[in-house]
Image (cartoon, rainbow, N blue to C red; front, side):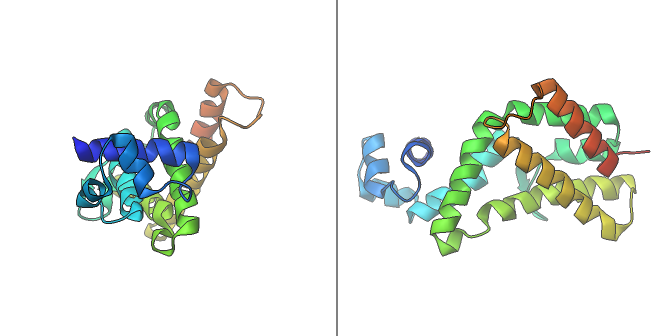
Length: 194
């Protein structure tokens, strides 16, 4: 319970004050505990950030532990394996509903990585796990040559990440439904069954 409260407080403070401006004392104080209690759960502020990515982001996206990739989203693997436009559209729609919860974690992760060498590529490593899910779905379906699968996953996740990170503040002159329709068309062209 205390660990979860520390994670929640860290996410809130990192979102409002910024990663660098937030101290361990700030987080402990927000929970009503001490630095000693914080350190009993997390050896450092950067370990808290790693936990936000590894646990909270995976929880929001319904990702589970995977011995091959760190984490996996079986629903993404299945949607890509199916390869139909409807399956891809449904997965993208479900994921886009989670953007308000995803966006702050990714943004904070990138801010933290810029400040702390040990966190460099933290978000990118997590994205690589999602790319591996796409690659696994393509392999299971037998679509594309093995050398193409990973790069197609890179392209698809780059699109999704960019749209997810910029949707709230962008003026793309599209409704959410239109944006999802365009993204679905692009993903279907990259990954879908023909």
